[in-house]
Amino acid sequence: MGGRIGIAVRTRPVVRDGAVALALLAACAVVNSPTAVVTAGNRITGEGPHTGQLVTWWVAAAIAVVAIAARSRWPASMLVLGTVAVGMHMALPVPFMIIDLAVPILLYTVALRYHRAASVGALAGLLIGVAGWSLYSAANSLPVPGLPDRIPVVPARAAVGGPAPPGPVRSTNIAQNTWSGVLLLGSVLIASWATGSAARSQRARALDLEREQEQRATLAATAERARISRELHDVVAHGLSVMVTQAQGAAAALDRKPADTRTALEAIVATGRDSLADMRRVLARVDGIEDVWHPQPGLDRLPALVGQVTEAGTKVRLTVDGKRPALPSTVDLSAYRIVQEALTNTMKHAGPGASAEVAVSFQDYRVEIEVRDDGRGGTPGGGGTPGGGGHGLRGMRERVYLLGGRFSAGRGEAGGFVVRAVLPVRGQDA
Image (cartoon, one colour):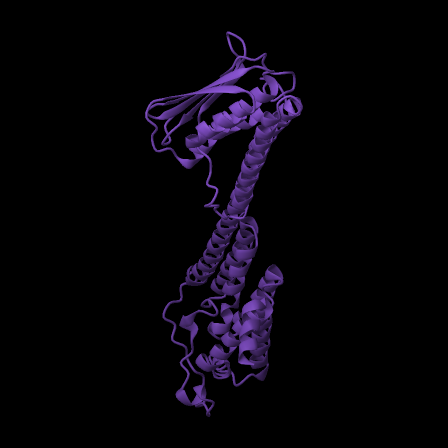
């Protein structure tokens, strides 16, 4: 039972605020002893007990409790209601008590829930009210009602409900300064407003941070989808190109050279298996699983790639210059994919009998790649056309630019097609 009450207090604002209001009223009843203080305050001017004023105080206290309990649902309206309740208390010859903290609490809620212009307006209205009340008291030669310096000296018997001695009870006024009310009450109101406004700003910063994190997550997901799309395109396009070329060769040699047909079919099977392994690796990365059996390809697999393309019917010569440094995995993978895609375009668009050259040069802070063929160049709209709409060149260009490198592709001076890429290493400019 107690657990359910605790959960309700934490999760339901009305229950929580109602508990706070009742706690304030209970503390006021125990600490301030309102009945004794109100009864004693009636005798400051020599009057006897006044039941109506006591009833007025308790009615105002009940209104303050309701205002605090409903502050989460109607902050502005409850601030007005709480101000009315505290004003009723100030009209009585009694000091401020704990329950009168309703106004600072409600002002804090308004500053927390509303824009600064609205909360500043509420603060200004309360300060004007305090100043007006102080001016009224000064015009009537009275101390500011409600301040502690008007606390009457209540005999011990009256404070505990016993009979009070006859005659008026005089109050000890430490300071009759009219503006002390503005300073004291204004300071409390400004402090409560500043606390609520600061809490609102902190909450706004937290929401902005949360939105920024969501935007970053969305951008990261988009970039990951683009990366996966490029990976799948490179894997599928290269694998299918090799398989189609091998199948065409097998069909041509089926009647005349059965042995060559067997070799081509075996190459198709091997290429299909390698492509499936690459696809499984890419898709495993989507689920956050690292495929240790089929690690990411890199430049160390270029000889196997060149051999595969050569077996498919396009002669390729590989040249490596310089000592290979330790490359970041992103640079290593991108370099391999660029060579793979360039050779795929050569197989698709360079024409029969074309050959290609792959040159890789390792410099201090960069890797230079050049893939050149001697074919007839790209066909309109193909992947090997500089201005074409294929995904090959666009994917290579995006890979290079994401790493901060340089990329160019176009017809060579002596014919054919040339792809050049410069990839930075260790964050240096290419």
